[in-house]
Amino acid sequence: MTQKKGTNISGKQIIFTVSNIEDLIYGMTFDPSTRTGKLVANISLMNSEHIDDVLPIFRDVMLSGLTVSPLVKLLSPGDKLGDLTVPNDMHGIATVCSITVDGVLLKHGVPVKPRFGGLVEIRDGQPLRFTDLVMYDSTTLDPLEILMSQSLTSVSEMLTSGSGKILANLREITMNAREKVEEVLDELVSAGFSGILEVGEPNSDILGVSVDRDHFGVAVIGGANASAVAQEQGFKMENHAMSTLMDVAEMVPIDELV
Image (spheres, rainbow, N blue to C red):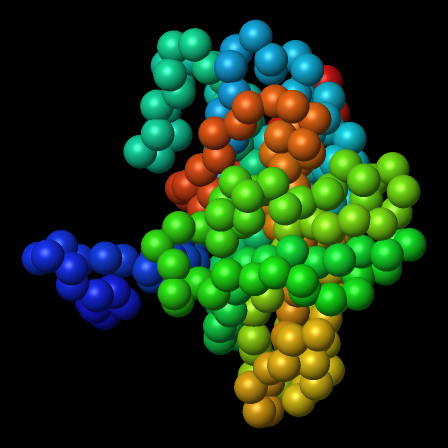
């Protein structure tokens, strides 16, 4: 077993987010060709009285293509998913995490290096650049949770005007795997995963960020954008990004719930 990346403070091991990502990717079994297996899920919790207002928000964001997938699982008070139990006065929505893309690539023999989560500026419907970022190997918290907690997103504005800031992630991949990556991403799109924001060129910047030599970048839309819109519209959300592995068979398209 490989040792988790971390540091020791006062006798306690601090585990960085990149180590949690590696564990989830390794445990993932989702196969887009058969649409079966376990994928990585985020969980968003809210007061039960708001669930009927929040579900339509999630639907609108998901059907606009600003999440990884339109698949969700509705969680009721007392339900348990992974290590999380939904409190008695709350409901939850489990959504597909963008780390699922990394896991699928790895299962196809493509080594992936998750770099960071951040905000991408969108102008007139076109992604321009990363404006804020948090490196996975320098934080113990999920970068997108950090950015959402600072109220830095403007996903609602992007939906209405075509311009704003959305959540996204960046990973690096060796240029020798470029053809295989395109095949896998096409397979994911065929399976209903529409969260690929941009695929960069080898040895070239992607959305204003440089990549290592002989690598290229892949920017994937963050799975938490729906929750970000709910927060922007005044709903209090408790977000658990990269929360657990769950079987895709437990999930349904969002439009079946709303």
